[in-house]
Image (cartoon, rainbow over all chains, first blue to last red):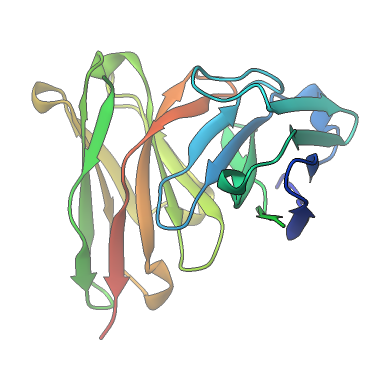
Length: 106
Length: 120
């Protein structure tokens, strides 16, 4: 089965840039979606199809995907960006989620 | 506005079944597949399967085949997920999520989640 690997945690200074990776075999050939989840809340879509932002998501959130790694970038990080982030792909008629990354804003 | 409202928390004994509902509003219910995703305490997201509200067709993750049944009632725009032969490791928050697209879909709206606790 297809696996997606994310770092357990990422720390970023307030106002700086955080990059969250999502590794998978030839993931660049797939569409990658990203979700933000704050404690006690349902996930929220922040990036779809590699690099598209839903309405209401700040431009500070961006995505890229190539080779074996997809990346979610959070620019000018704010305290409100502290959350868990999950990548997601579709493989062989199955949805697969990444292992999740906890982002801490220092 | 699009809303997915789920049923309330449940406590079940091992071996029992649970049925969680997800009432959709603000869009055409039959126009989007509904997926179910669960999250055990302190763990990540786990996909369970989907239902096509239009046809009733389903696709379940291999892990849950034989134990999960997803259904819908078009008359009240509600999707259901029933999980049987519950075990303690089925304790989790269960989410419904509306899917955009059928190949490589993404989930643009989620229910608030339903906590299912399995305990003797």
